[in-house]
Length: 184
Image (cartoon, rainbow, N blue to C red):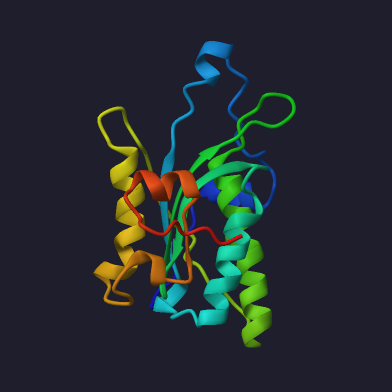
């Protein structure tokens, strides 16, 4: 398998010659319009995460909740991750950049997973799929899509039974979950 070519921009970011793009502070009216982002990233070379590795990945996804992101829901599947979050602002009013957020989650979780498994190398694909929820899309439907992923894949009968699903109580209740999934 041939390695993917790396763009000059990607190399510049990786070598720190170009600073991470930051979204400048917005006037108060615009700052309230931050929209949720639905992100999916996959394991490298179809790696299947062991249960302990999924727990580590979930822990790292939750780490920045309330710091860099407001996490709305997360699920760690055997070979991919779905997150729904809104980027927060730092003390100077700058919105944390999506590449910075994902690099932190993927990088720290990969190091921990590799340490656990005694392996080296990539755990996650470099690419991720991200999609800003638009006005005509339903936040509730996206949360429910993420919640139902383990059910659709035949891993559990009910979302509540999947140990690597995190949904804050207020969203679980809004999606009709009889037993909110809250794992801190």
